[in-house]
Amino acid sequence: MDLLKGEVALVTGSGRGLGHAVISRLAEWGADVAVHDISREAPAEFGEAKDLDEVAQRLTRFGGKAVGVTGDISNPEAVAKLVADAQAALGPVSILVNVAGGDIAAKGGKPNPNDSLFVPWEDVQAIFQRNLFGTMLLCRAVVPGMIERKRGAVVNIGSGDAHTGHVNSGAYAVAKCAILHYTRCLATQVREHSVRVNCVSPGATVTARFKATRSVDPKFLDESKPLLRFGKPEEVADAIAFLCSPLSAHVSGQVLRVDGGLQVWPG
Ligand SMILES: NC(=O)c1ccc[n+]([C@@H]2O[C@H](COP(=O)([O-])OP(=O)(O)OC[C@H]3O[C@@H](n4cnc5c(N)ncnc54)[C@H](O)[C@@H]3O)[C@@H](O)[C@H]2O)c1
Image 1 (spheres, protein in one colour):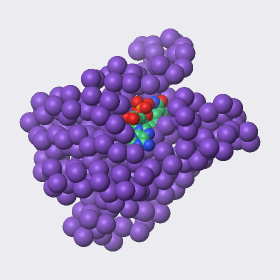
Image 2 (cartoon, rainbow, N blue to C red):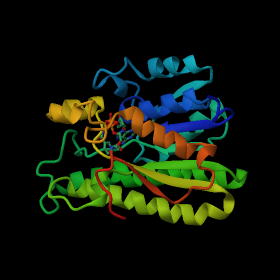
Image 3 (spheres, rainbow, N blue to C red):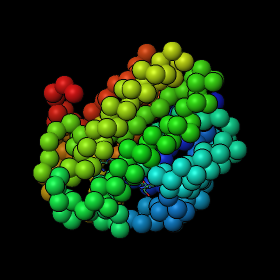
Image 4 (tube, helix red, strand yellow):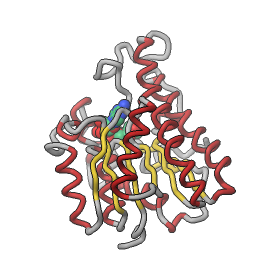
């Protein structure tokens, strides 16, 4: 499969988890890839790889180039540096996938409490920084170059949580919901420049962090019911790869849920 031959893809948070499944698929489809994480060691946190260099090395098995870049996506200087590092190694980024994020407290773990009224304010700020603001900063750093070159594809990551009210994870749901609408606004702005911007909203997806941070009911892992079980990272990655590729050449400003059909309402 060489649908993405000649493309340069930067995927944030791709040292592990869902981001890693995404960057693997993009590399498999022929792209040169910049694998990014907050630190060189982040891929080891849940035992997925020794470090970012090992991940980048593994990705070269598909025949393209791979480079590891680091930086906190909530810090504008770090974002400028990680984008510059990626482009110095691989050339202009033509595919940007904003995967880095999560419902994570300022000091790690889940906010406690994690509701909409009493969640610690520092955790609200950390969640917005890590999800919405990080996504916006990456777009601000990369999309102007796409506009100049009159081509490019961006995919942001929402969440099933963004589409419905919640008692828990309220701040996370709001930040992800804002990513959905930022996607629509940015897509509208850059449409005339032939740059596409879409969003994928995964349902519960069994990544290493997902398994490590909650108890998983085995009934949602039952392979005999493919739409009633939790998602696999590769299934979300396939939808994202589609939105990065010429297969979706006339698709922009859309939010695609990958949740086995759990949520079937508009918006
Ligand atoms: N797994 C799920 O069930 C699920 C469902 C819906 C949405 N999501 C979203 O998918 C994305 C990936 O989730 P995952 O389950 O693979 O978790 P994960 O923790 O394995 O992956 C998140 C990645 O983002 C990186 N990251 C986090 N904060 C960062 C920062 N400030 N700067 C740079 N990198 C940072 C982490 O180091 C990690 O590599 C997240 O945005 C998450 O909100 C996950």
